Image 1 (cartoon, rainbow, N blue to C red):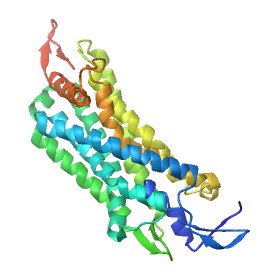
Image 2 (image 1 turned 90 degrees about the vertical axis):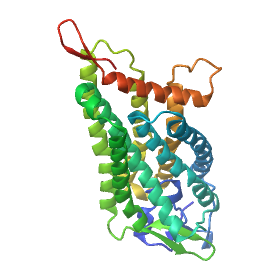
Image 3 (image 1 turned 180 degrees about the vertical axis):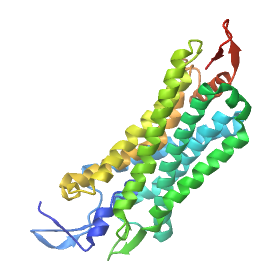
Length: 349
């Protein structure tokens, strides 16, 4: 079907689908050869239906899983540095997942009935989730690197108070970087529906550059640097008792980048001519929903990596607690110092 998009500025069209599924505002009015008047279409495309179904699953799993991590790390377990990192990560994902019902309503009805404040707030929450998640993963990587590379310093300086301060700083930076996402969100009234969309007022390229740089590239390079130091140090340390905590950290990081990399690639592609192709908007639906899925996966990674995975008598929550507790014990072992026969420092992680 040959169709033409009418009724919206080019900049509004170009800025669509830069956020999660609720910003994939394909509320365009279509005019074809057989219809001179535009019809407001609901969610009928395969990509849209896929997004709705996956968002419902993500909402349910994300609320239950991250809620379980918050309950365990925040109330059941003793407060330690490592539990602080994972509690912050779970809180970020939980807050975002709690806004997904608005996304689902928007996708199903192709309408935004929640007003300008929620239009801005949901976009703000989405990006604060993106930034805070990757910042916390960088913090975890740096913390593990310092623990292994400088065990004496780590043992004397790692504290819950400092960990809380670092987390607060990460959240403040995430909030500052997320302000433009809320600043440029607007509502447009149509005859029978409303559109929540991005209007970057000519700053679209700058917005994409900042998101890609601070939400993906720079954190990725930082984590790679930490990993190279960790791998080299762990190869020298043959007394490591367990590498399972590093597998958990690796899974969290790999999952984040696998979920978010397609989103950023598509966002960068939008700066070129690809945005004019029919399949591009479907790619935006799919990649944005995959990025959204990252918010519900972390608790299950904790569970699957726990020691008692094969023991069916253990509950899902106990697996999460086991994984986080193992990470905490490993961090304590990493700061312990023993002397070998030739009086060299050895760290057991």
